[in-house]
Length: 352
Image 1 (cartoon, rainbow, N blue to C red):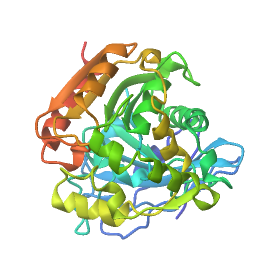
Image 2 (cartoon, rainbow, N blue to C red):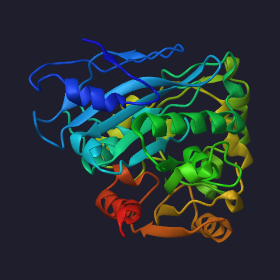
Image 3 (cartoon, one colour):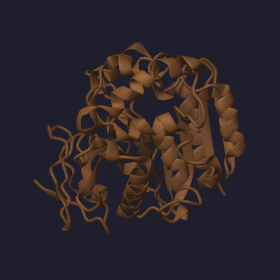
């Protein structure tokens, strides 16, 4: 069976819900190719029982974002996501040295407790997460060092616009981590490569603006590590679990084990090299309503950096401090506090 995705017009998820296989069937994840015509997808894997409005579907596809350039996207949605009179969508931008799976942590036993996409879809939103160029199943330039923030910004902007048109969403909300947070802020600001009014609300985690802790400076932003990335063959580097140790310091054991088995891989060096020259963008450019999460045990971002960003952000902003939280709250014991504030902030858009 083949499903057709039409980028302008009917949403892929509509077609998939209408033609979804019975829950007793075992189906594979989709891999969508785009070549100028309407792309096709194989049947997708799904969770939940038949007829359940909270049954969550997943589809993988590629969005064209330039000549011979495309981004791999993981999307999750439920019937409830599609039934909303005014559809809401959250497009997620990752940190560096991780791909879109950052937002879809599914444990070996099928537990989706730590999956951001699953939570968003179950709450009635359409969720999508993109992998940057040089990562995962996205396009790979000859030299991975060419994947700079200035190259990524219009690419993720194009992906957000296609996602918005695909689902008929007026304003796309953004969730960004690390470099993804910086990109999200710029998409909703005065220097956005797309119409910034198409961006709704922005939530940022794992955020670094102008400074990091001395611990992280010594462990990662050292001259030796920078040289490792600058001299990586063809601008691609192979990572290992120690690269993620500080990010996962406060993570639950199951989430950390999943991440250490999933994150290591080969990545373009360009996105990570941006971190050696912060700030990536000026906070004063931002305009969209923004909520920043910060855990008071974050080993990477100091409170002083949070205060600087909040003072300089150019739009309305809120700060949520998570006592005991680290750098990745959706993997940590503070995740229920995170989700409560997350949905309270996004759902304000629907209140009269």
